[in-house]
Length: 554
Image: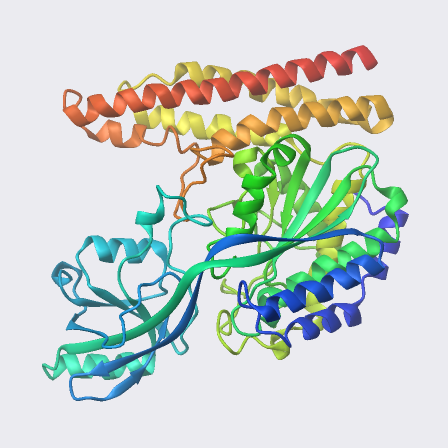
């Protein structure tokens, strides 16, 4: 779509100097979750938002936060070797933990396991299952701060037992070479010292609202907490949020929907505890009034020229692609939203666009990511301006377009395609026809709905009906397409397949049909199929009602 005159003016108003100024100011604070510097940063941003006329709230809540304190390794010959420990890893106590070191997973039981890569919940869980008493990860030239809990948000009583039980540390290539030399010489004993401060803390959530004429709103979010000074992660993203808020506040008469900015704590040290808390506390508001979620993380990095691979739901891919293409000429294909980056609202049926937008040519966010080197000199002012303008255009269209730029047809087609894949995998072992048949019907009706967009763009009454129908059609598709627990029980921070309730048909196809495991699994799958069918029926009802209302207005 072509840029409108007011969109050009808005984009021209986005300021490189303001972006860098806010980024630099935030980088003056080490913004660990639940600490005074983080609170000071939140108060600073609130003051700016108040000055631009946004309606602000600074909420606080209890969150289960884990802050690494100190760590080192002690080799068999007494040499002290540097390392870092991680959020939600176990502490060793003052005397440390001593065992033999091994690089062989098959020999992990009772030993300290040396692995290559970044510490994360998946590898940590696998190592603990193999019996490792501690883990040492070789990160590369630098060590990278990580969080190793698989529990999304603060754990409830039933999930507390899923937190890691063993010490986890990371070392550089240089330290790893020393460890491997010791192994080669037969000196296998290693003592790990690690201290992690884990417990409940009061943490902030800063909200800034530009109210629209109706009750619906777009959520624009990013985390405020940081590792070290976090100029890129996430200072530049917070600056982008602020600049988008500023230029839209000056044009609030254009808004057809509200805009809600949310700055989370607990992203880095609480496994998304801030957004998870908000998802719980405001679940009804999110499930009934929030029409889209745009997330921003680590933008404007030096050398970050790759724009085509950010995450998106199918319903927002077109909007993201248009914003990137019109401002840069690059093509955006996007990838499926995963379990990361404060994506806490898919269970509520909220479409989502982006986390990180720009990446290094080979992927990733830069060698300084999650290290003390994430300082203001790692930000390219021109690339930050580029990224902020892309966000400004996408958010502006979400809040100001006559008809919501959400593509229910694309989302329905995605669900239909993925169900067809599961049906093929199941073969004659499980009947998915009740779901696949309805998915085809939803896809057809959603395409009919998308075909009525010109009417919605022409008539205000039709726009209201169109928006309501699109959102109501999308909610059950997204909740079933991305989650097992909907808005009430978040899935872990691990890989979650599409249509996760039905993905176990792949396992069923591998089992002996008469085995106990297959029979138990068929019980689960029957119930899962019923839930997915119910979601598809809800989408069908919404699409039919919307089409009928639009037909009456045509």
